[in-house]
Amino acid sequence: MTLPCSSRCLNRRRLLLGTVAGWAGMHGQHLSAKDAAVRVGLVPYLSTRTMLNVYEPLRKHLQAHIGRPVEFYTAAGFAALTENARSPSQPFTLLPMHLAYLATTEWGCVLVARSTQESAMHLWAPRGLGALQGTGTALRGRRVAVIDPLSMSTLMFERWRTSVQLDGALSTQVFPGLNSAVMAVSRGDADLVVAAIGQLRDLSGLDPDEFQSVAALGTVLRPAFVAQRDTPAPLVAAFRAALLSFRPAPSGGASSALWAEGSARDFEPYRDMATQARRVLARGLPSR
Image (tube, rainbow, N blue to C red; front, side, top):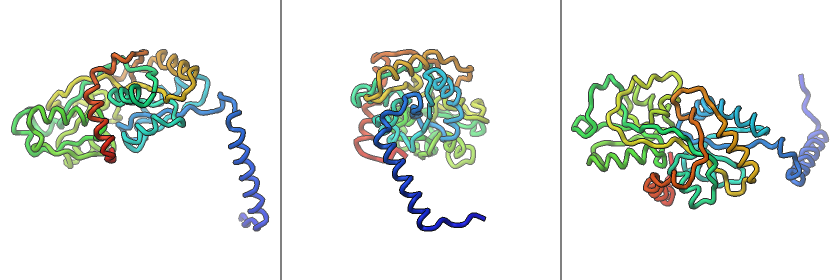
């Protein structure tokens, strides 16, 4: 049985903790760089646990090649992701291409590397729902599961829905991630789901063949890594070199992307969606 400390012990403990905290605050800048973990933000298109699991091979690769601890994080939503990408506490962030465009043109971020792989975005239905036509009356009144108003998938769906004049005929339900969106469809709480095929392939235990494409929304490059504006150039160079040497086991998932240096031209196809995202951010709406 552990006896409670006396007030003298507690005061001494508080003094010691305060001394340590003060020392860390004054001398933290002198800590060896190799001891400081590199914080990396991931696009929250899946649940936190799933994201960290499927990106673990990349984390281990980065850590081994830059010679420093690497910690992966996800944000509470895409709006929080954009805030974290501008914070000095998070040197690197994985962003969808339209948000990476904003990051590199308006937030002072630097493009580190972009994916070399594309992923097709679709409106999906479970095969048990039967054959559906993307522009037919069979879609009217259907409930569509989406993830985040700032996500590429949701913005592409909204553009498609307007183009086929189904604005008032298809309702959307926002879910925290693709995991819960797919589960909602499986339970019958939603009829359709919007996702890239690469995102579906990252969902463990899910066979993408269980879903049929109702409408093709377009093809996009998978996300890009950007560096926060104050990230030291040598660290950016080391991080980029590590990404370029990554050779994952092929899975077809977004997490198994190969990387290239990229350039500003790679973002041009996403300018319109970046404009849409800017409007969402300007309204200050919660992204979930």
